[in-house]
Image (cartoon, rainbow, N blue to C red):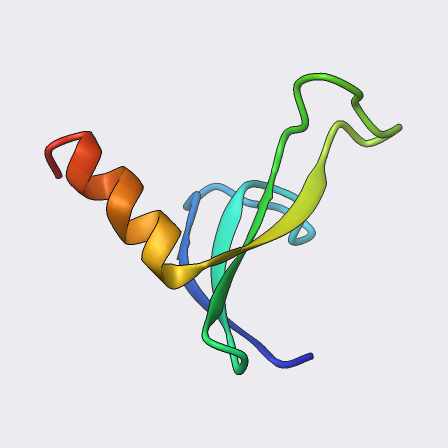
Length: 62
């Protein structure tokens, strides 16, 4: 799947810090820290619909 970076931390080394990507399927892929069950690197990648992300932003007043 093709990912296009749209946001991320500026001090990232080796591409392993929290980042938000847009996918060609009209979704957002988020790389970040999993809270409940951390991986050995304490990161996970998840994919959510763009509409859900927009709804969350509106709910936060952004």
